[in-house]
Length: 182
Image (cartoon, rainbow, N blue to C red; front, side, top):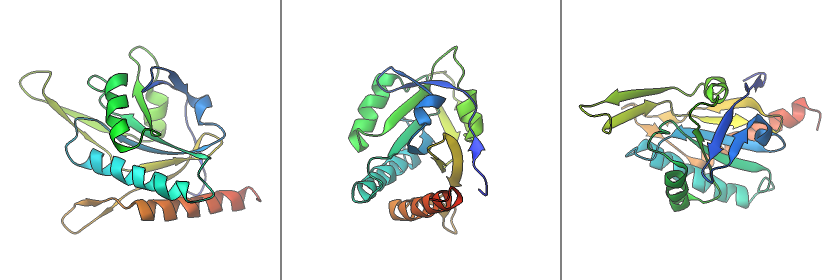
């Protein structure tokens, strides 16, 4: 993106039951991915790529100023406890976020262009969710700085590379720093 875009106000809940708002985005970089815990393939691959990305961060000068967020598009099944248990399998440092019924979350979803489509079967307990696959990069000013889409092969299969994500992230940071005169 040539210019960072603001993120509208929102109130979400993290996996520990605490509120998470626009103010929590300030002062650090954030990498955001959307998904849900009942996903059979893409979401676990996304979280694996993010946990490997976290290892690249740990070996870099960026270790302490980047947080990773997994936003669930299925808050009905993905309670705070479900998110805690699920994320612990991949990397406990990842912040799990979910919408809170009755509170505004659309600023987050709309600003990051997170799209989810729900497909219901015979019962409401049995449904699947299709959603956008991308990594959103939020700068320390709490603005959307970039959207990184994974590569797809000629069969339409998504390829998630933590190494490419890290290299792209470094370029985005350099662009940001250059624009700020740092």
